[in-house]
Image (tube, rainbow, N blue to C red):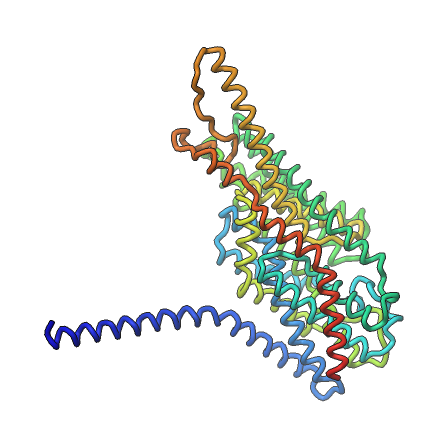
Length: 512
């Protein structure tokens, strides 16, 4: 090889190394974009807080608390919002980008329009205000609750477990309250009610989602004329979602309204929504083939609408989780005594609302994929059953004033439709195999054709292209690994957050 050829070869190798370095640098930089933007948001939250408390005696504490509250809001957005839009993404009704943008918008609007304006200083009355008589002690308690709940939700997001934000905050208050005023100061009855909800709410979500899915299968999917059945029943399901949501919204905007008013509003919205949905579905279904693929198309827009409504409701309901302790700190920094309830300043609401939205945009995809795609396979009909179950149960709970976790309901509903799908298809295969064997005996045939699974995802496919039995079972199988991870995270949320909060509380005491 000539000197010129060797030199050219060496230059090519050097250019190749530079290209690899450039690709590696770009990959690393992409991984730093989200943390960098999150850090910018924390700095902006601190600047906003300093602008409103500048010159006050405890201004530094409030600024630090604002940054921690913003960090908690980011984690809530990264973890909790997946339950609202994950099923829509998993059913391919929305792209990931579209879901993130929609969730960010509706979370912000819900938080600012219908977010609580008054919040208890001690979350869910876990620790009576009379037990915390010192303002400095209250500030330490709330700081510890903020830090511990934020760290636990961050850890849960990292391991891919959707957890209840409310339970994390309550756990933080339990641990810090016990460290501040002793175990006797904690309202253990409220803690037991929350522990009971670990079992009740996932089962409620699973049961309700199974009921809706069974209804859809029986009255729409397995009807001879699927399109006619969809025209009859899909508007009813849409109206049920709209009526439930509006009744819930009235309970948030007008808390003093009685159940009679909420019921009348819900019924009125149901009928108006039914009229609009009936016209829309009839128009959309014109010319559609009598196939399950057409049904998936009819459920697509209602599913997107349901995800938007649930995101709005989440922003309205969970805002107090991340800014309640911060609002208590802000109030304590200006007051002379501990108060039972405090007003939430608008700038504090801004931190919570935009923090949740930023968390969705920056870190939401991981949990959205797990909830929407990795637990079980979803289509628009199953995903809408999940969304409808969450809406109905949350509405019923708000009527009776029961503390429920939308996270537990939604994830329980996803597992519910997945296990129902396993059972239904196993039952269908056994029934079909029995009928085939019976027919084979009558005809004197020794071989039986391989049957197609009785499932709405596969019934339109060419029987010659049906997957193997092993592939069918793999598709149907609910991911047990995710079930174990999520149940473990749920069971340990309150005790882990409580223990962490107690450690943080004592640490803050030493540092101060």
